[in-house]
Length: 120
Length: 110
Image (cartoon, rainbow over all chains, first blue to last red; front, side, top):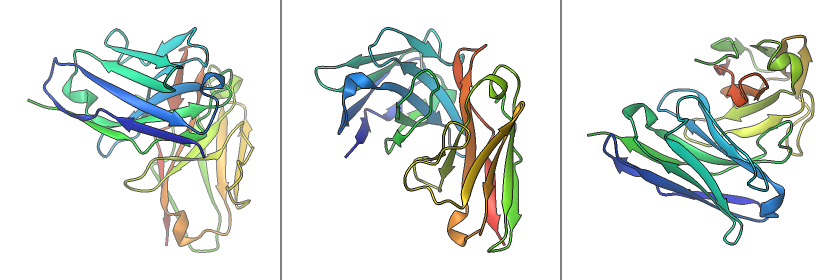
């Protein structure tokens, strides 16, 4: 069955870095575009970034552009989110999601999420 | 600041129908396909509707999606207490080159 398992969350000080991982299984990794979506406590969903199925293109939300980098490793079926220069407003649960049709994206499977808390 | 506007809340009695609107612009809803997600407190969202009207396996037929112009609508008929959740619309915005979510709507069963 399809699984997306995030890890790497935790408490970090403002200005520091953190790398999230999302281990995937149950599907052909190189057939799917993958995204990160976050949700601040008590708030709505915010799209963070995506990376195309073949890694050829990446897109970022305005609030993270220039600070976050998404990448993928087909040898381990894992997608990453490198988060630099973290701000308190980056505090959120981060979800890894699968997108079966990148030209017209939608998210058919979601991970359980990993909590990132940015605080001094 | 979301570019897709939803009503903060809707409510109805069990067995009744509710509709949730998602209002956007020509660069998002007007030119792309809408999806809808259901989220219970403390859990990850779940896909309900994709490509405006399509239901993935597992989504009851009580849930339906539609789109007209720059607005989309999620309908829930035969409302059940288990439908109490937050609902979000979402889609790719061609002009912004990013995915956008609606502001979210809380459904309450009276």
